[in-house]
Image (cartoon, rainbow, N blue to C red; front, top):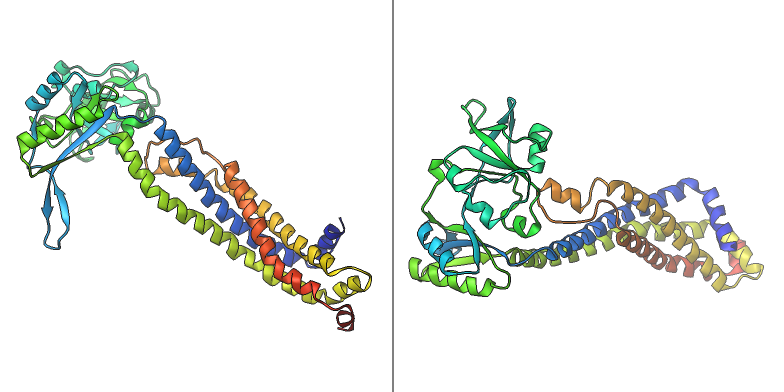
Amino acid sequence: MENFKFLLLMIKKRPLRFILTTLQIALGVLAAALIFNIHFGLTDMINNTASQTSEEFLQVSIFEEEKMEDGNIIHAMGNKRLSSKLLQELANNTNSILGISSQNYFHDLLLVDKNLYRPVGAFSAGASFNQTFPLEFINGSFYTEAEEKDNKTVISEALAKTLFGTTDVLGETIGVTTSKDSEPTNYLVTGVFKELPPTITMLLGPVNMVLTPPSYMISESFVEFSLRIEKNQFTEIKSAIEELVFQECGPEAKVTIDTAQTLLNQIKSSTDSFLKILGILAFAAVVVSSIGILSIMLVNILERTREIGLRRALGATKGTIFGQMLYESIMLSNIGGFMGLILAAIVSRFFNVGKILNFMYINMQTTQSSLSWQAALLSLALASIVGGLFGIYPAYQAAQYSPVESLRD
């Protein structure tokens, strides 16, 4: 209690210095808390997504390796293909294949009520898309194979609300055009589907629109295609696809077979190093901000030489003086830390992993929408520890003052 009284006295004598010191610490804790928040948010995102992924959906790509003049090797796609007939035979001869399809990204503009939209996650695909990636519909249904030659489309719940303000859009038309001056091609909306799970969007990215393919996009051979298989059959199907590519495309053809799980493992591998860097940055932010405590406490000690000498003359031990100065350092760190956490709690509502993922159109699950308690606790503890460490030297210097010399000064 006595140490707290001396702290209040110091604040009262030098309020501006106190404000500037704690503000410096607060900014460091703010930076550390936001960095730790991203750290825990990414970890949470990966764990949540991992719990919802499986090897049920596959994305297959066929390519050749070409060596460039500079020695780099690139993946060249287009020369080696599998025909739709061969893929259908593969599906018919393998009971564990539940669906097989090919889809193309669609980059044209959408026209609704004279307003132009640039869609994210638009695909052109046949009716087999829904067999490979089963969509859960709110309204309507996927178009049939017989309707593939018609201009029809299904859209996500989010896109329906963006374009029409409601999900009750069956029978509405969406214009598709290459530019605002071109004549649009109208597509009839036949269904509105729910958001797809991460095990699919990890492979395809966000899916907001699927429409019947224009005639120029219809192909009888593919370098990329997707499959849906029975669970625990990945190894068998992988071997069958690799053997088929080897037989039909030759030994120079290569094939990659990705699942949501393999892509997630790649993300984990790349984020591990990133998370370590974030931890170092957070520690550095707190250390840099806490350097102010060292300089301020040294100045305080010089200004309070007579006070320290008087306390020593009245019986205060070196340990008492050391404890008082160390207490003041830690309290300054804690006060600045709490100020930083208040700022971080406000900023994190607008800057967190969830907001970043939405901005980048990455559909991975995270529960983070504000400052996590782990980030807050770790930032405050780090500030307190570092502040204490930086307060040891000034406290030691104060404890070494001689009562006689201090009062003489």
